[in-house]
Length: 458
Ligand code: PMP
Image 1: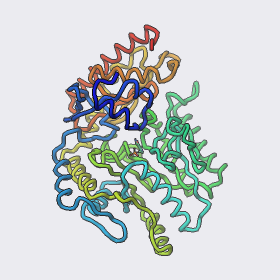
Image 2 (image 1 turned 60 degrees about the vertical axis):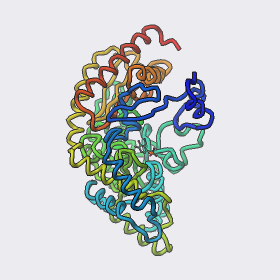
Image 3 (image 1 turned 180 degrees about the vertical axis):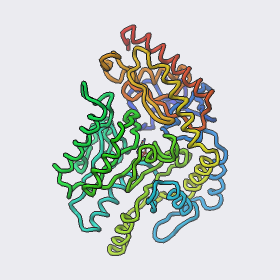
Image 4 (image 1 turned 180 degrees about the horizontal axis):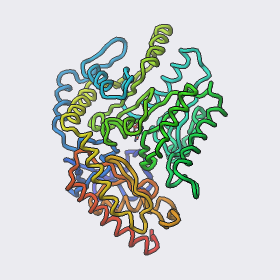
């Protein structure tokens, strides 16, 4: 039932991303009107705890005046300029330098885009350009993982390993090979140890490189901790093994830090938590707390040097976006990173993460809680039909969707991923607010448990 004219206009004219469009027509959207701290409010004044920080992204919460001021100041001084054809401006130069200071060692050069997907599309092109430049035109394939999320553009959407983003869109393109997702709880075989599981995945990686021919495999891309695929923390030794095999066959390691970056896991980048030394790193979302669109590709010097030589040979580095490195976005990012440092939010995220996980652990005995996973201030609770056998609900995803919808009635916004419930609250959340978030989670879980007991009616 559409209750107001904004909803009607929206449904009549606005095509929404990642949405069942017919369901939207029937039910209408929730119109979010304003935000403050960890809360957002709809246009009827209802309050919600934004336990997903928007789309895993609003690190500083919804009312950070300093970001508003940074944007305003930049809008007044220079609202737009590009960085094509030998132009530069202060905010993007300063931000590029700042990112190389914060990032894992050796990532010295930065390219800016508007979104994570554009950044990953750029990575594909940069890796191709690089390999062409150094005389390896065959070395073009990418390895990615089932369950990985890298965006939805044609190349990034091919790297993504989620059917919902590919079915009906003729993706993935054939330059990608998807490997198994590193999720022991679901993908471990009966009786298999976690170590043996890791070995099996690493063997799959090496076998794939050898079967394809190492001379054709250019790069491996992965999120240190997978986000949209269900908050999957890889087993110990997984990333170290991936890196070792990639180095052996001269395959570049690309870390997609679009969710993990800027403190989410309790370290500035997920690479630190997982012990990854990437050749290329992609970041976005919390770079501006999503107050402005921005993403960045960071790369090692040897890749940049080859690209620079090629640009001279070809006359130009023929890649870029009108609003890439936007002065307002980069100015907001600089202020956002300054706040994260001043308030020590990375360390705080680690403390708060431990507090949140201790609170979630109290649900471990619930008859429908299969696995509680995550690290730092990101988590997922997987709900299962049978705890002992890990059997999924039938149909899979119905419980997650119901939970997501029903949580709204308890003033909570979470994400249902299949039947897993994800949490990724703003990093400015307090312990008391985590308690309240988990109280609302429990209230929703109690209702959902009763609904399951009643046979999951439509
Ligand atoms: N990579 C990862 C790991 C992401 O989580 C996302 C977005 N959820 C993207 C890339 C794509 O970012 P965008 O939506 O800005 O294109």
